[in-house]
Image (cartoon, rainbow, N blue to C red; front, side, top):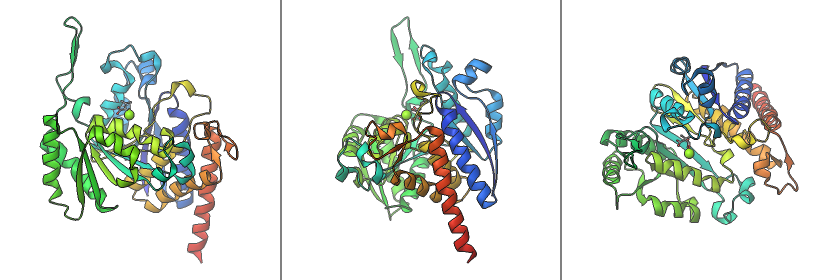
Length: 369
Ligand code: IPM
Ligand code: MG
């Protein structure tokens, strides 16, 4: 398998965690005889400083010429006073729009080993395995008009969706539900918002194409509560852009740390892969960042851009094994370090690679017999 992967590491902990993800992918390539070619380009705050724009043309052109883009994180405190269209985040939103992926898959899986990290009781989170499908190119993030009129002391954004935009992301969610536990929960605010009424009506129409999937609708406020009370009841959760942003961070409580969550954006010209966590400027460059979200994001590249399901699953199994063995980054050890071996970002990456290479060579040996 040949894959051209553009790495836009971005700001804060982005470079540290993407380095580890790339090293894991290189391990897969070396062991399996694949050809993964990596290129690096700037995005976000580092690009504002070096190039005067959060998404340089060169980065976008390289992204469009790749098979997959692995993005670290964008954002930093020094840019907080800039208007939305000049901030590092604008580069992220622009690359999302230009690559065209509208379905952002955010799996939230409760690793048994991390149950103590969740403030929820283990009997609530044990076995929780949710796949959020967040619409990524519509809603308040992109809707126009948008403005902060300082003279009038008034600001507005627009939540807008077309039937087509809802239908295409709903189809992706139903398709994924077919391959999982065949349950889809669509989240909206149809008791108040017209956009949500369109959303709900369209999801109901698309549901007719997928008779094998059980569909339910939830209001977003109730859903925020159900996720904490009974996360195991959900399989695939379909939401619009802002609701998905909020609920996916909330789901970090189920998994124990935001640092564990990967994401993949599909459906456009080039798939975009990003860990869900942000740039965490407070811990950047200190070797404290958890690379597992980025490494699991690397697994999603193999699954969704490489068709390498076994290799993706091998990375996920290695992450689990490393956790089983008591290895933790500081966010996961959370002061409760007894019985854990606390590792730096690089050490954690190396541990995953070591475990992965053992399991791949065992598999290779078994196949050779
Ligand atoms: C996310 C992030 C981004 C978003 C920010 C950094 C623009 O919070 O990917 O969840 O809101 O989509
Ligand atoms: Mg977010």
